[in-house]
Image 1 (tube, rainbow, N blue to C red):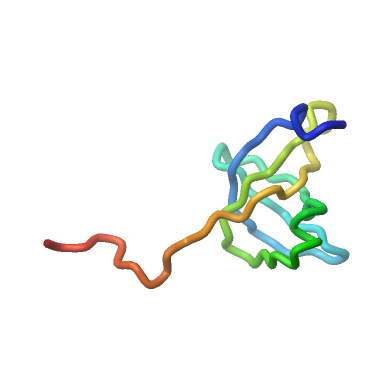
Image 2 (spheres, rainbow, N blue to C red):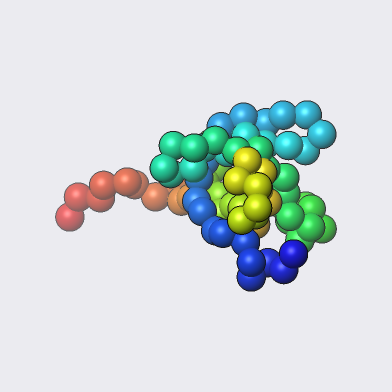
Length: 83
């Protein structure tokens, strides 16, 4: 299946399971099992609990997905700067 056929959704890593499986909670509240995509494994991109990710979901099986992108978070920047 091509990457163009996947349904993209955003969510948060809620649990790290064995053998490279992750439990992702989507923005709409659904949970699914996901693995890292090949490019993320190739470039050693690490994903930890609480990270915001983009997941590609197969239209045939909505319970499994592929983590395709890890969103960056500016932890050093203030969340509500006062001017």
